[in-house]
Image (cartoon, rainbow, N blue to C red; front, side, top):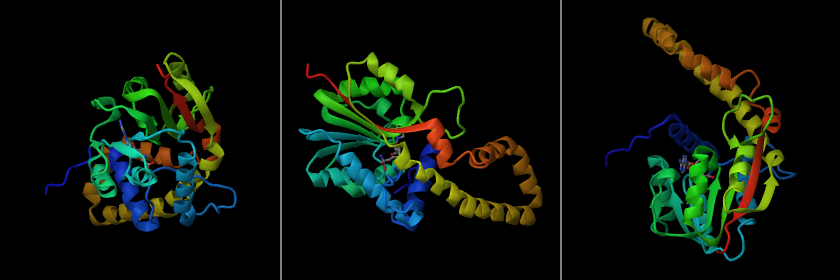
Length: 281
Ligand SMILES: C[S@@+](CC[C@H](N)C(=O)[O-])C[C@H]1O[C@@H](n2cnc3c(N)ncnc32)[C@H](O)[C@@H]1O
């Protein structure tokens, strides 16, 4: 069968992240770890921290929920866990690679909608629509409008994700919608806020771990490859470095200079679990 290509740097990044995490650390999920007290912040414990995150999520699923739509389901392991807990679960997955993994995880127990949430079309309605670290990638007004549309009356929307805090300064870590903007938009919707839990403290250690891995593994490996290519193919190397100078500088600025730390994350970001309810009628 012909291999489907991933389009877009974000999906390629998620694919590489999942392949490396699964192979080296036996990770099942693409979301952050939830670092509980007593869990040593060490890369070898990331799998345990991700399991803590799942436990935390499951404990916030409202009573009475039977059907769930997992939007941006990653490799489908959360959906698999939810199915084994007794929920009926469908998934939304715009990534060809992650959809393939999800199919292995859920077999024929779930319908997988292979599109972005913005493009979803279905007659089905769900008791709970959840966004686990996927909300940041979806167009904000469209995410709210589609969730109002695809939820059953009295259903819930659960978001667990990174948001940008309001303030005069902007951090250099990308990612996340503006929290204040979400609150403003939700006020004009039919939803009522049921729960708002700040888990920035429990998730910030992931950034220090990622930074450490980049400094101690990513950078030296990239430098060695670059040295090898410069030595072996000097003319092509000079030409490529010149052509992609702006992009390479952008990458360097993004991943160096101490901007990707837990401290910066605490300052500029807020990781929230938000549960919203849709009225019964
Ligand atoms: C960081 S991963 C999180 C995956 C999974 N929820 C987990 O917790 O392991 C982000 C997910 O969002 C998905 N995604 C990206 N853009 C999306 C969109 N527009 N609509 C739906 N899902 C999207 C990606 O394919 C990926 O599955």
